[in-house]
Amino acid sequence: MSNWIEVGSLNDIPKLGARVVRTDKGDIAVFRTADDEIFAIKDECPHKKGQLSQGIVYGKKVACPLHNWNINLDSGEAVAPDEGCAATYPIKMDGDKIMLSMTPNDGCPNN
View 1: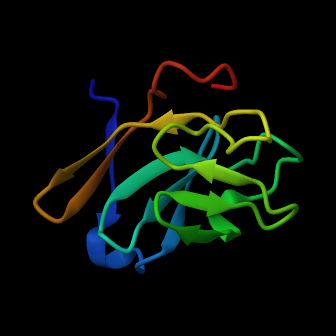
View 2: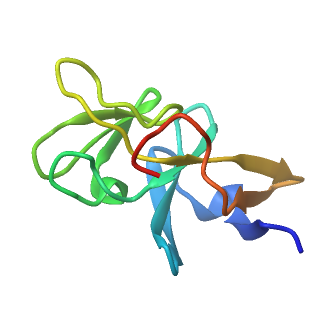
């Protein structure tokens, strides 16, 4: 059984926006940058658990809507001087369909 699921198409996510995928292990935010790059990250800021999907996307980062912590979308790491990590998830494109792995990437202790 594959752990990849289809979560929509590129056009389902506005540029500089996000969509939330609800799972039994928590919500995952799927982001689209201005350059049409797609990233998936746990929808929970490592600081106070703010919904990152509600934050402002700029470059390859998102600003948490609660306390403006900046989180790198590619690594899940908070931008210094803040410290913490939100789990990231592999994404692949199948045509214009976005495929999300339900297995988080290694490297973040908050998986």
